[in-house]
Amino acid sequence: MKKYNTVILGIESSCDDTSASVIADGLMLSNVIASQSVHEEYGGVVPELASRAHQQNIVPVVDAAIKRAGLKKEDLTAIAFTRGPGLLGSLLVGTSFAKGMALGLGIPLVDVNHLHGHVLSHFVKESAEQDVPEFPFLCLLISGGNSQLIWVKSPSDMEILGKTIDDAAGEAFDKCAKVMGLPYPGGPHIDRLAAEGNPNAFRFAKPHVPGLDYSFSGLKTSFLYTVRDGLKSDPDFIEKNKADLAASIQKAIIDTLIAKLDLAVKQTGARAVAIGGGVSANSGVRTAIEDFCTARKIRSWIPQRKFTTDNAAMVAIAGLMRYETGERCNIDLPPFARVEV
Ligand code: KG4
Image 1 (cartoon, protein in one colour):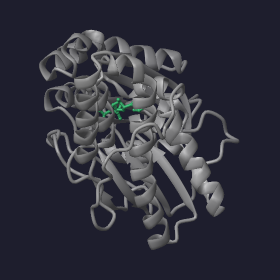
Image 2 (cartoon, protein in one colour):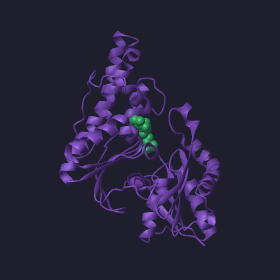
Image 3 (cartoon, rainbow, N blue to C red):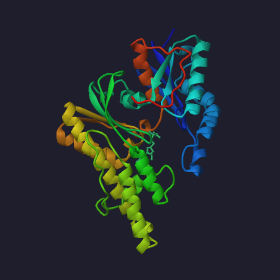
Image 4 (cartoon, rainbow, N blue to C red):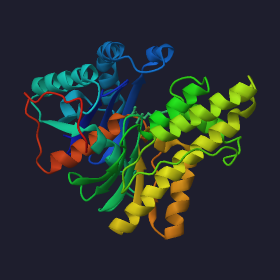
């Protein structure tokens, strides 16, 4: 006799994390992630190396996810996979694997937009009592590749109200960290240093972009000039000011995010704000969002740190929501590298 009615296997391989997760009757039973350290020495993700690592990781990761869930592959109801956006070579590994497995088991296949996955990560439940957001809500999606303000009306109806016109918030963190000689990805290093620094020690030129769109490239240039000028008078400028530089750039990025969020809340009348994506792991961002929402008496949804980076649990939950509304993916649909929500 079957233990569960609906068991979804989620597969994520859009960038440099190979992940598989099992969600049964809405509860997460496993979420296995194999990260790739091979990219560290190159200062960024090398697409060809990422897809090779996915090839090595995909079978053991899927196997572990099913075993940790205490299930067998025959227990699966459907397979959900990230079809895009992301690195094509990486996406091809997860997509091909998901298709082959679904075909072999004779079960339905559901495709998931990676960005929808980040937004819907707030619906991943680890216990039956766990609270989830109500629609509609506003989501600030901030990662290494995207910065978007999304009005989330339903699991499948998401309107982009604003987005970055140049760099993403994560890129701004990473590029400024690089200027300071910090390892890639620099966001977590800035976060750690910022805790010790004075956020008002340095001021950077704030971007002026109309409406709800973001811009981060001017901030990065202003940071570069501050460091360059400082180094002219003191070769140890970075070393002496590391924490203050980190705290100041983090504050500038957060102020930029919050200013647009404020406009979006006023425009939509949102009663809840969620954040998602790699940058939502930032301590300063998390506190700023909580304070912002408390001051306006609206609900904040801050994901657990394990759900801020790429993971298959968010793919499985987004897949489950699509499965329940009858969405299915044709076996001949290819992955896609670029698209917005
Ligand atoms: O969503 P994500 O894992 O994948 C991409 O879209 O690439 O986001 C990665 C980004 C990187 O730019 C990384 O520096 C940033 O998230 N990030 C952080 C923190 N943790 C990760 N940025 C600031 N503070 C953090 N704690």
